[in-house]
Amino acid sequence: MDYSIETLAFDKQQTDCVIISVYENKQLSPSAESIDKISQGFITQQIERGDIKGKNAETTLFNYIPDSSIERILVVGLGEKDKLTAKLFRKALKSAIAAIKALSIQSVNCALIDSDVKNKDNQWKVRQIVEVFNDNLYKYDETKSEKEPNLKLENIIINALDSEKELVERGLKYGLAISQGIGLTKFVADLPGNICTPSFLAEQAKMVAGKFKTMEVEVLEEKEIEELGMGSFLSVSRGSRQPAKLIVLNYQGGEKESKPVVIVGKGLTFDAGGISLKPGAGMDEMKYDMCGGASVLGTLQAAAKMELKINIVGIIPSSENMPDGDANKPGDVVTSMSGLTIEILNTDAEGRLILCDALTYAKKFNPEVVIDLATLTGACLVALGRVPSGILGNDDDLCNDLISAGDTACDSLWRLPLWEEYHEQLKSNFADLANIGGRDAGTITAACFLSRFTENYRWAHLDIAGTAWRTGANKGATGRPVALLSQYLIDKSDA
Ligand code: BES
Ligand code: MN
Ligand code: ZN
Image (cartoon, rainbow, N blue to C red):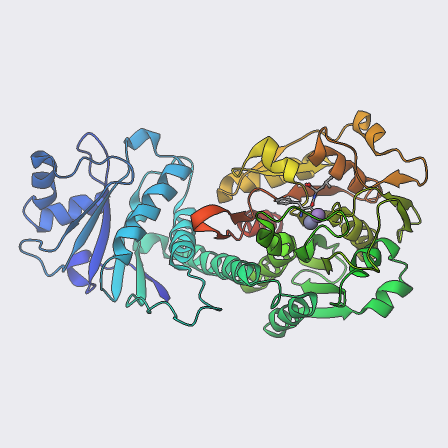
């Protein structure tokens, strides 16, 4: 797909379809007005007839526009003008794209950046247009013998004012970088566990780093992981035939001495639960237990494409969690890289076992902040559903910055408390701490566990168990939270 910016008037352009918007109460957007003018009031007539109501996400297609060379117009309703929020804008965009997908056309001109979205500038709107288009044009067919017939659509042209060219060009650059990052994350996440193994993830990381002069990759093998003393991480991998990998990406976009943002992602390529085996129903979805790791890949790729002026380190501990004669057993005690001993009361609470060693390792990069991403607890789904990701951390500024980036990116977060009272639940009679904290507050006790390994830097943990993929008929990866992390990094790079 080719995206470009166009500043010419509609009657000087040649495209197969123009997307324009109208509001409720017969209010036209500037581009609807200009088409109305060149077509002798065609849009107003349709509104008067009641064919266009302007309700949010309503779409109406016209194949003939009097007195003009325009082939088609798609009119998208945005709802009430002074109530157009970022979410409603995205919703309207999504329905416009659904309508476009049904057409057999090659090029489309999207004139939706003239909509009045509350508190959002045109750079933001261009980014959203690119992101929502890309997200909705994504179709997984890697392991299907019948490939999706290629959409004829090749060119997406975004209409903008000449005076804003620089702003929207940057929106386009960022939008493309973020969308491609999201696309990479979704693609890797949707692959089945027999293809997407820890070794495969490591290869993907090498491929990403290979695209940029500013990025390096290092893959640590089990022997090196052992030498580092990561007894907790390796204990999970011991029950699997697939060798574990510790993947480290290093993006140098900033000054050499400037401290990096370190992003750690859970890369569990299949979580059967281990000896504490999971029930069969829905177990296939545990191929998505590497979504944190996939998001690290997508985010680093996006940051490098945007040429952000900061340093970023991505760390992905990657392993499977399988039942096996050599697997962890309930009651086993392991020693983490930090020296803390852990009693494994449930082998299915493995994410924290691989993350704790990666979080200890993160210290070596002298981090500005550390952010980890993990499909860590089913309890997060119970608490928050599939709308926001959960966030917990030991630094209010960091949490607030991430929450605000999430709002901007429409990739939201909701904070849960990480109070000392909860630490009680992790007490063990046989080790420094237990790996589970009982039924209550599962997302919080999981974060409490991690917090024992992040005491000497600023840290936030994102639980993406409810947001990294969709379940049901529309099952598939979402690419979250790449958009929010990209926004956080843009904010940091601009600051
Ligand atoms: N990967 C799962 C968490 C998960 C479950 C994410 C369902 C999304 C949907 C994690 O490794 C796990 O199994 N967690 C356990 C922890 C429990 C044993 C304390 C869980 O949530 O049941
Ligand atoms: Mn598990
Ligand atoms: Zn897991």
